[in-house]
Image 1 (cartoon, rainbow, N blue to C red):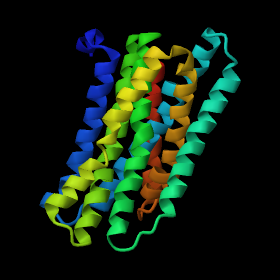
Image 2 (tube, one colour):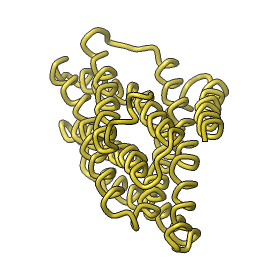
Image 3 (cartoon, helix red, strand yellow):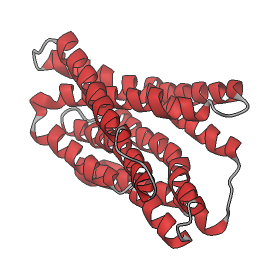
Image 4 (tube, helix red, strand yellow):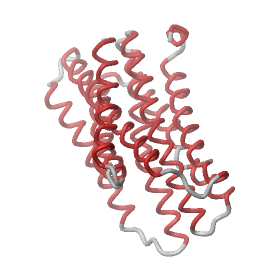
Length: 258
């Protein structure tokens, strides 16, 4: 971790989101080697990643947003609430638009890839903003939290990559094309990560709002996508424990190192 202290936040946000994209590609690559993956393992990764992201939405995003708003003489409750609700509502609106598109035949494949890609945008944004915040208030604990956020998102990206490529293969698409579209769903994260970092670095007065915005978008992803998907398992109690474990790990790291 000490080697990362000398790397710029922008480059770190790019590296972190390239990691999440790479793990998405690893998940998509399952289509090249197998027809079926163990659903319990996929659900557990989703559940654990959901817990990490849920903890990160507060400890790594909302709490710093409130502190920074106070330091900038803004109204903390207003800025954090407005950003949080805006992030969630915009993601819900975009998701609603996607769900009402026709999904017959090949359009169904497009909808599948697009829906996963859509909810990867706030994940990349959250990573970028968390690294961008280091430029305003750097600390080793904040750096660790930013990387843990990226790792948590990467964990839940693995089953997402498989969730795109495997159904496309079942619909008759070749293994190569199914893998290509599966990994493509994660390609948006480096773009969103760099954008989020640049906004956080160069428009610092907007940083509290952006942090809260990313938190709201992430909570919608967790509640609307990750938790329901993981709870479809035959062992919902075990998935709940995995979610709690992910939350606890992120919370311990944030609190102990902070």
